[in-house]
Image (cartoon, rainbow, N blue to C red; front, side, top):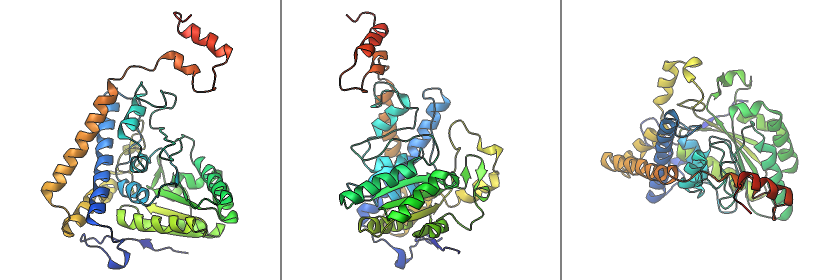
Length: 357
């Protein structure tokens, strides 16, 4: 069963009227600014890691359209179960940039106080559940949350993000199967960036696509151009609407490409060619969306440069604000677990702070 690839933006920068989500000029510029911010964040944080100022980062360059387009379709009340490459969705949902940057430093500017490894952020206020490293464990968790919402009669949706590698896990099957049987209001969003670290998607599955796997679980699968923010927004919006209205889950496969390394600990030149990267770079989502905005009369070259500079400056300010924060006090290790710190942890805290009475 071959699924068509849903694409709104044409090669010449114009848009297919049948697939135009009809966003306002302000909406389009908002999306573009967020894509620029995500790109600027990647560029800065990779430099920080290479300079030894932070320990680890998972970049998302090349996947900005999938991140920002899908995140923009969410509504207040919806929950996000992200993977470790979905910082764009978190920022779009209201997670403060300084909080995200602070979490990378793991110092006093980090709300988690250094208890998670870098790039493992969360924010209850934005309804963004904590990132974790094990692949796809968030999928059955998301289904459980969406089933609870259904039982409570809450008209919300839950979106779960994962990569193509996640589709090879047992948690993928468990989550998809339960969602299909119980018709939970879940949207499974797979960013198929062609590689699970170094393993190409052709070694992940013999199916023609990841999206077509939804048929085996009794619900709809959609394959979308993951480098087209408007197409991503449209299909995600429709899937979330169906979920909220009680029409069950959807599996979205956003076909995209990771332009950089899997993480700052990875060397992608060992498993993919320069020619492959160059071919995908022609479809860079930031440049592609900028070209559409120029054709639509929303943007010109000078405005694009100004917005890019503003995004870089916003990231620079966040880094400056967070990097100078003090270290996390060691005694904080015994806090935030119990409402009242029990006696044995009080004793341990004394060992960490000899001056404490």
